[in-house]
Length: 410
Image (cartoon, rainbow, N blue to C red):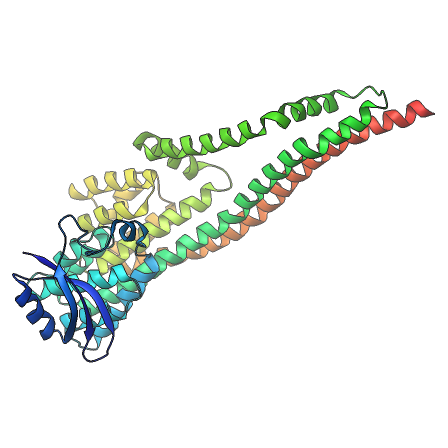
């Protein structure tokens, strides 16, 4: 079916719209838009090879097109939940969202989803056409909601879950920003001292004919080497970072890195709590939306983004398929805290597994906050000690020769 790119205006709100519409002919496209209360200003057939979402855009426009952020998706999902809870028809709710969202890409996406739903496709199938925007867990929860007839409830949970994911990511990133900044500052200060400060001091001591201590000689040699080759250090650091991310992108590298971060001191407990919280919150959300336990574990596996927990979930899925309870299956992986296993066992006995998972996530959210605060309090002094050590070494390399010069004058 041909795709037409149009520029129009909503007859009710007067808002200008630029999007695409599928139709058999130009006449059918105009008729379809008229039924949607859109006054067509300009319409033409989409060029072959144009993006299905950003139809009619030039190559430069497509390259500069902003991706849909999690925040924008959370807001759109919340709007969708509010409209469906108010008994607004799904097609009308999608039309309203396509006109209200700020993201141009998301506006077009919801417009196309509405067209698909109007043609008889299910809501989940329509969302599935845009995997770069709607993850599998999102689409599967919509499918379960359609089967159970609980779309408003599930959309509200999806909005809350998406907002929660954004919050947990911000917490972790916030905890890592300060150490990263301090490392960069420490490296910058060290290079500056070696390249610009130390050579001037060394030049001054050379006129005094003083025997330099071994550590001063060592620092002077490093300084002399860096003066002409400091750019090699910068290039080596850039290449090292690039090589690290290339290695981490491989399955083996990712597995080794995740295993290291999961068990390392200081950061390890924080990584564990974030992963367990994400596991519990995701599984609670999908199970309470009507997804079955095995399918829920499979969806959760794709969300946790940690190879250690992914392997543990894979083992749990096999055991659950063989008839074991979730708590027993998870316990045998030896990757989850004892408290999680006990709470899951209690939830299974009382028939309130989803609620217990939500409680686990809430408890570990508090643990994440505590660990972030504790980790920050520990790392900041360590970084200060490291920077102070570098400065002290530089000072000693200057004070040593100065003391010898003063003694020789007596």
